Amino acid sequence: MVSLAKKVIAEFIGTFILVFFGAGAAAITLMISSGQTPPNSFNIGIGVLGGLGDWLAIGLAFGIAIAASIYVFGRISGCHINPAVTIALWSIKKFPSRDVIPYILAQLGGASLASLLFAACVGMGAVTIGGLGATAPFPGIGYWQAVLVEAIGTFLLVITIMGVAVDRKATPGFAGLIIGLTVAGIITTIGNISGSSLNPARTFGPYLGDLLLGGSNLWAFFPIYVIGPLVGGVLAAFVYKYLTDDFTA
Image 1 (cartoon, rainbow, N blue to C red):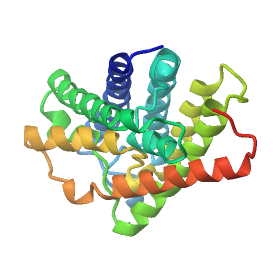
Image 2 (cartoon, helix red, strand yellow):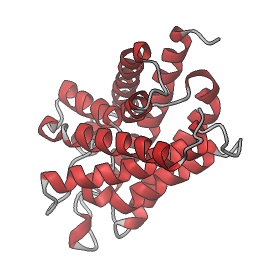
Image 3 (spheres, rainbow, N blue to C red):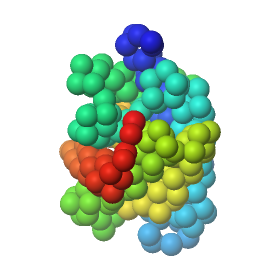
């Protein structure tokens, strides 16, 4: 039986890895492309590979970080590393209520420390140019459009998690790989729409780091990355449970 303390530490470190390497890749992409002319009008604010090339690289950074974390910490805490996943599992009674708040606090803490240490490693350019990889809707995307796309993206993520990791009938050994690739694919597609957070903690860490270190104040957008992922995640959990009458976890 793994203690709650060990589970919380695993969630803290896993979320740290996710944000340091994933959001860090987004910040580095912005820093590399600083001052260069985007090849088209739709990829304003990201790199110079034509939009999808940059997002594929960022998505793979997230995907690899997530896959590694799942294989390391999955047997300890379940490796949620995302409040939307924790709440989705809690909503269908697959996660105990007493552990929800400790998990979420650990996830927010790990994300925040990752952003601050990334800035310490890279320098203030990571904040002033890279924004610590913070998410925000892209030009021409409305607030509720961003909420919708975050909900859809998180729906795909969580229903994949349900099928390959939570369900005991899932083929063992593939959860980290499939979930990581799923995240990479989602980010490649919707990165230039909403920033593709899929995870309130992933957005919280860079937002807090930017605020503390004198970067952009993007907190007006934070509800996008809470409402969208929570709605999409909870809906996915209920849909999977409904579709699989013999669902076990």
